[in-house]
Each structure stands twice: as structure tokens, then as C-alpha cells.
Figure 1: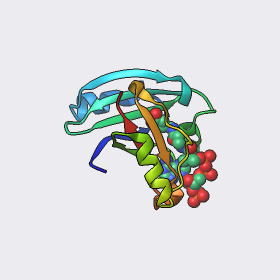
Figure 2: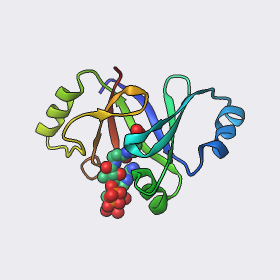
Figure 3: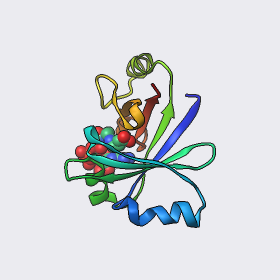
Length: 132
Ligand code: CMX
């Protein structure tokens, strides 16, 4: 992996935490969008060399809803920016890493994404993210 694209942070309510990022920390808001496939509303924050992705569940079906119930707010995942996501997935599979997707799926910002199970990544949920 050559770069981290963003860090995903689970929050209960984007609107109430935004001033902390934009005013207290002074990191600009890049955009807010809904990712229907993940039942999420997300906000991208410009943190200089990487982005922070605030993740707010839209309903109880969201993986982030379950995460918040179990662990509370905090770091949810780390996303590597990759090129050739299908080849990277195949390579990781061959190396014994359990992927959570058979195929890449559509993520925020129109990117193709895939997740590595935290059980085969020493307790960390990693995402592969390829910008279109
Ligand atoms: N980071 C680290 N560990 C995590 C985790 C996370 N974000 N989410 C769950 N886990 C751990 C749990 O604590 C649990 O560990 P223990 O068995 O030791 O308690 C284990 O993983 C299994 O968790 P679970 O609660 O039994 O299973 P879930 O149904 O919550 O599924 C996961 C967990 C990772 C498989 C699921 O959340 C998933 O498929 N995630 C990928 C998709 C996703 O996260 N989408 C949201 C972001 C989308 C985006 O950025 O666009």
C-alpha cells in the first residue's frame, strides 16, 4: 500500500460534531453526501495530507449503527488509496486475508471500495478505495 486516502470516524450526528472539526480544529469541510448503499450520511473533512470521513448512520441497517451501539463514537476504519482494486483484492485473498466483498462496490464520492475483515487485519477494519 502506498498511501492512506482517508480515516473513517463513526459519529452519531454529523451536524453536531462539524463545528469541532471546522472551527475548533480549523479543518475545512469538503462535502456532505449520502451513501445509500451503506445507509450512511458522510462528511469529508480536509485534514491536509489526508481526509477524515465522518460517518453517520441513516438507519439501523447501517454497519456504522451497529459499531456505535457496540463501541461508541471513534475511529471506524482506515482507507488505503489504491489503483487496480480488483487485482489488489485478488492479491490479498491469495495471501490469506479475508475480504468482506466478493467484488468492489460503489462507495462515497463514486469511488470503488472493498473492506478487509478486522479479524484478519489484527483488529483494524481496512478499506481499499479506488477513485474513478
Ligand atoms: N473496526 C475494528 N473491529 C471491528 C469493527 C471496526 N470498524 N467493526 C466490528 N469490529 C469487530 C467487532 O468488535 C467484533 O469483534 P469481537 O468478535 O472481538 O467482538 C468483530 O469485528 C465482528 O464484529 P460483529 O459485531 O460480530 O460483526 P458486524 O456485524 O458488526 O460486522 C464488519 C463487522 C466489519 C464485518 C461490518 O461492519 C462490515 O461488513 N463492514 C464493512 C462495511 C462498512 O463498514 N461500511 C461502513 C463504511 C462505508 C464507507 O466508508 O463508505
